[in-house]
Image (cartoon, rainbow, N blue to C red; front, side):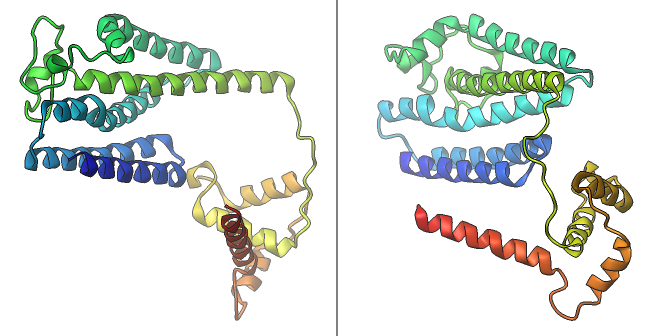
Length: 282
């Protein structure tokens, strides 16, 4: 059973890593991750239902070490989704206060679960038979009400608490990173630091026009809510270049008999070649 669960976890990590690369929008990434994790946990539950633990030690290991790795991811993405959905639209000061309040909530959980937190973090095992064996709950051990509504064949009294501890570690790291980013933004705005190097567009204007239309077609700026003219003017200002009659240039690009997106194809080939060369060095 352990090998099946380990394989399932590895596949889950790969899928989540893929989402991190492919989806820039945090809320959409959280939604997709939650959907994948729920399906994976369902598969994990099916494995437990079809297989029996050979020993109590194996069962304890599963509910203390394996299952929480799945559940903690679900908790993490769900909490991050809620945090980002509810964050204020005010300035950096309001955001700092908001994220610090979220950190305080984590501390509150830590304070409420201090005894178990110490037990788990210290690597103790003397109460594992009560915490991580199904049907061995002790009402005197500060059980959460949700436990009595869970599937007893797939839960113990404390496997969710372990998952919560693991998730809180990641949530704390996320919140601290957000605060650091806000602080850096504040410092940047104060110093108004300019780039050390001035970038000059040295490729052709036709190549830049290809990019202009590609970016507009893909809707990469302002979620697509921006006119082609605005993007063109931004390019001209940023690169100090006059694109001239870029709409006419686009008609000429369309009229090409072969390789309409010549520059974009060249970018693709060059990047793929660089990746292949890097792979050879690994």
